[in-house]
Image (cartoon, rainbow, N blue to C red; front, side, top):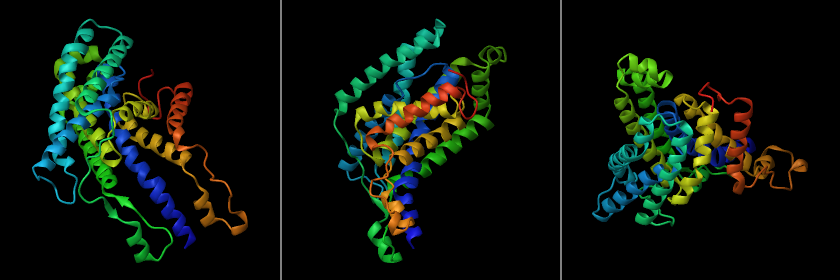
Length: 336
């Protein structure tokens, strides 16, 4: 029984949260890797673009709630996400037309585009904070838990309960659906194959008759979908605060680079590598070892490698190690 309690601890505090957090990072990392692989620059505005999409989701969620429109036990934000995706795509295409296209036509080096994206980052931050403010915003409604700890304890008679939030399951399922559709699109459709060809060899793709404007357009559309869904799911699962999304840029970039930047599947897996690393290293294992070890060997300390305050240090350390020893990532991507 003690081993079951120990497993439930891991399920509650490591496995399910890391799967949910990893799904959110995976969507952001795929966004980063698509922009880098096809448009050939590191987009440092990724976190704030996700923040923009989440802001629009929140505004429409509040509107739907005010008129009594909801999805019952599911969060109303799921109704708002499709509308927010449209706004996000329009915003991205506007930014590309006004800013990035100029440097792309001039054939500016990637470092210039990366620096320009920092400017876009600050502008997007300002827009979000002016419209919705810098404070925490919670917009979740519907049924909060699928499984509650107290009910699970009563049902099983175990010391540890199992708690699974609806937002965690929604995040995992929606990520699997979105990523599956994306991989099918990239591998099976003519447009997707054109995008991959353009990413592999731009000159050869142009000689083959591939329209670069169409490739750029589709890339930003996909990026808009990923940014909005990833950002909204993160906000639903935790809360929305613009500065938090700026901070998330580090684990998102770490996930993209660990998986192999320019490789969407690698970015997807990289999200889970970073999420599990952060959660595993910052979790306090005292109670876990109390269940599985004899009483004489029970630990007195928290058995925690790092405080949760240092979780971004885990992402940064992994990022540095990968760049030093395997810059192409787990799955070979483009070397930075």
